[in-house]
Every structure is written in C-alpha cells, then in structure tokens.
Image 1 (tube, rainbow, N blue to C red):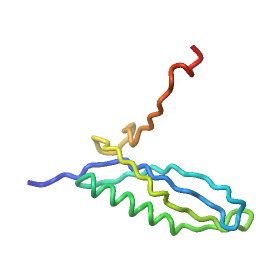
Image 2 (image 1 turned 60 degrees about the vertical axis):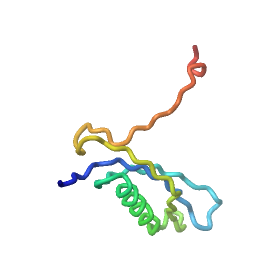
Image 3 (image 1 turned 180 degrees about the vertical axis):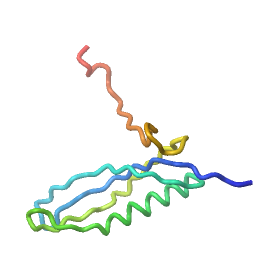
Length: 103
C-alpha cells in the first residue's frame, strides 16, 4: 500500500524586532504550504522551516539590525486538495459577537 502525501497550509507566528531599538516589534503571521504523509510530519516540517527563518538578519533604513524570532505558534489546516488557483490555503476564523454589530 502506497501512502499519498497531503498538502497543509501552515500558519506560524514570528516577532520582528530591531536590535538595540526602543522595544517596539511587529508580529508577522506567515502562511506556507507543507506536503507530508501525516499530520505530525507536516507539523515538524513547518516548525523546522519556521526555526530556519530565525537566522534571517538585515539592516533597516536607519542602519539598525533587524531580527526574526519564531514564537512557537504553528497551526495546520489540511487543504483537502492540491494547491492551485483558488484553493483555500488556511482560513482565519474570528468570532463576532452579534451584539457588537450595531443592531
């Protein structure tokens, strides 16, 4: 029996910080595609790729060092079909209290 790899959309969170800055930072929500045989393998693959992003360093327009830190948050969504035009990669769901909709 041959197992078929499945596609997952992986959402990982990162903090982007200016070294020796005022402490301000940006949280980046990054989506990537992962192909794996099973959920645990997909999670490990997505987290390994996220940790590899931590090596990214650059200098901003003010000459300050900017670094990226993986926050350890990784959420997977099994796509159910192969990537292609119009295929949902990873949905975001937000609870909206109906009392706050101006009714």
